[in-house]
Image 1 (cartoon, rainbow, N blue to C red):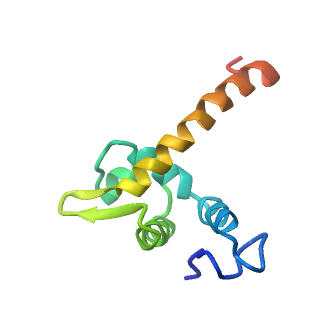
Image 2: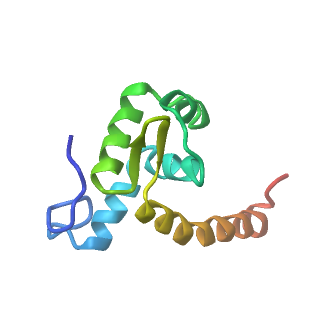
Length: 112
């Protein structure tokens, strides 16, 4: 498992500047979906899998490990949740979610 880290080569950057390491981590399949689904919820592995459109257990397990290593997700007795760092990241992503709705409506007449 190759974990995106600042200072190490990542997609788009041989030097691994922090922003590119974050983009690499968040750009992996299901990373953002996991963060978004956890939101302010604590979810079991199975609940998280169902909310992520039945992502395969292997992919989900790999992404959770990566997000745990990056201090974005933590494992509690009753499931997975966002760390404070993960909650901060989600707060910074929410405006992008709002922007995406406006973009979809204005450019693509969403929902039709």
